[in-house]
Image (cartoon, rainbow, N blue to C red; front, side, top):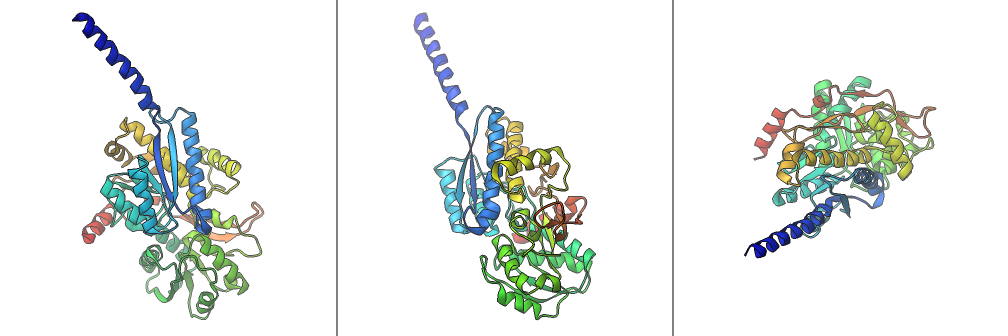
Length: 409
């Protein structure tokens, strides 16, 4: 009997010894959903994925997370909510990813967020900006490590009031959630800074518009003080190319949060660029002195040939934020990881970031200034920047978030 017991005990030990290494070697899977094709994909999705892959490579080279390697499975949402949800289903149900991150379209982000909530899988928004994602539509399983439309709008409104003023505002933006939300947030902020400000006209071109001629002629024929344009991605390139031919930027005071993003500006020359436009930037690496930025930007530029902007910095930061949260949780347990991530401080290329517990929104700074050429660089960039300090003032307060969620119910 003793011999049988001894043999059984040895068998158990051997089984454990063979099982544990196999489990330890199983990779932690990141589901990456983004626009990876077309103009938007090249400007935002591709750099975001590159930033993620750099972080993954660094972490894996240092031993991984809890002794496990990271693996990225990337999918193209094609800017369509139904495609984003379809890919999220496959990543969660078939690929068994541990979390999902990415998205640039707010409509896609909201759809993926709702699906992940039902599946109790963590979703981290890295670019999509609608404040609703972590505001009215926020929930336990969604985080955002980027700015949002409230911060965008308050920052642009703050700069527009300081640089220009003027009560007659014309709006032109993409005809979906992000554009309309941006208008709402901008006018709420700007009318407080410039009492009596009102919208004197608005246009809503479809996302992906190539020829902005009819829109530009309409704007230039309107009696206005300034234009607020929450246009983004490839649409900025198309608008700029057309507007330059009309001398638009010499005649119109024009502002918009995405007009200072390096992903777009780095593709422009002195022959056509948004001269004098008040644009915003999430990652002005040419102004930042922190060690994280000084290490990240040259590496990203060398490895990809691209100039780092929001996507690159946010994707990179998100992977490290998850590493920190997983290690604090001590296990690949979604509920424990959420608790560890909420209220945490995360190092990033733009400096230390607080991720609020009340809405899971990172307090990412945002810089605004006129776009210009200088002798320092061969491309236009934001100069003479102003920023809301501290960054948290650019976001809705926790009490505002609580009220917005209550009203949504």
